[in-house]
Length: 81
Image 1: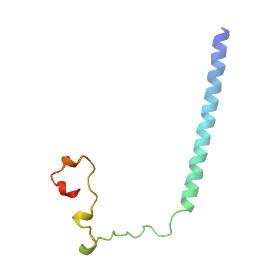
Image 2 (image 1 turned 180 degrees about the vertical axis):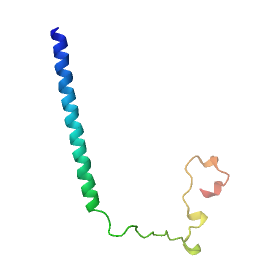
Image 3 (image 1 turned 90 degrees about the vertical axis):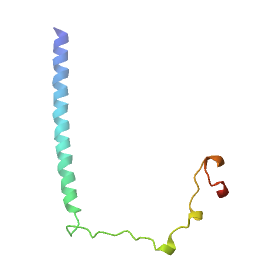
Image 4 (image 1 turned 180 degrees about the horizontal axis):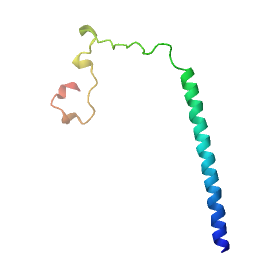
């Protein structure tokens, strides 16, 4: 009988702590929402930035590119080494 009472008290304690945790999470959620609203940008959308493409003269020549790692005999073009 005493074991059941101990289990019941422990269960009640866990339930209280769970409710406290839920309340704490709800409070944190509200604080985060409040801070997020304060940090919103003044414009609705940010301007899209296009990525510049390289001109033909700026592209790397085949001999400037990194060579694949591996054994020398793995590739047909052995004159790369």
